[in-house]
Image (tube, rainbow, N blue to C red; front, side, top):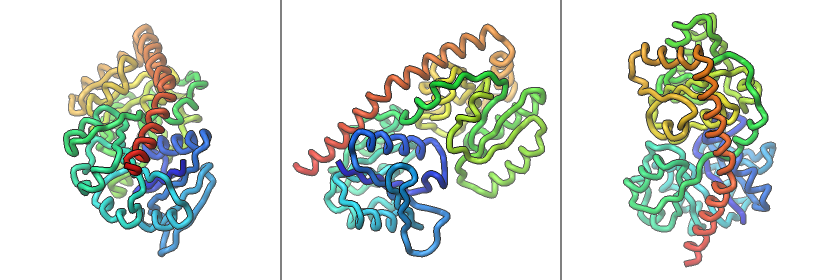
Length: 344
């Protein structure tokens, strides 16, 4: 099968984040199973009208200043059997002249999405896929369609060999919506505990720049740029901190950490309580900092409690690796369903 993915945003190596890494892992698995794959992405680093094609990721990626330009260029070189749209929005209506009547899959990775604005003709023929039950429920509510759940697990098995021995605390994505204020206050209140903050994408570069400069002044915090993988970071980690204010659709780094036996102290919003499960503790990010410090101190200071959480985290994370084949088969089935609708 020939599959074109359309990603209306930056893609590796321009950005490494949960959705991007999930799609990269999925594309590589599809290629390994005999499919032909290409991806069209919008780039913030490019200028002018030209689209550039590269294949360093193991499959061709066409980048342009807009997703529509990238899709035009990709379609000129690749006749897909199925087009996979990975994020809906106002731009979707403009894809109709590009996509035509090619079978369509819409794979959503965000709970708070504008799926209600999908044109009726696209909605009637597209196959909808969501990365979690929380995302699927929102799509059903807004669009009144059937939704297949394909969990964002592609590539997480790379961490199965890691055995952490460090005592640092990990926090990813320097944004308030991701709970950066909670992470900063924990670091400031526990100056003897080493923290590692890793940057990711941002909606407000000015705010992130302010936080970056602030964090650099905290003696026990090491700030790292956006990372292609967490291979070199997770061996140093004892606890993963994820106090997000967002309605997280999954929380990929929580699963990656738990596969290594690292517990997660995270938010109770979105899908995070399910993603974290028994391998950690969840609190509302608006809880007083004293509640977060209490949970933090117990995890970091009570060795018996920590070992129990670590054991449960590893079991919970490794179970997700076992689900990888099921997730892949569910996605392949969605591709086949889209083709069947196209023939009908």
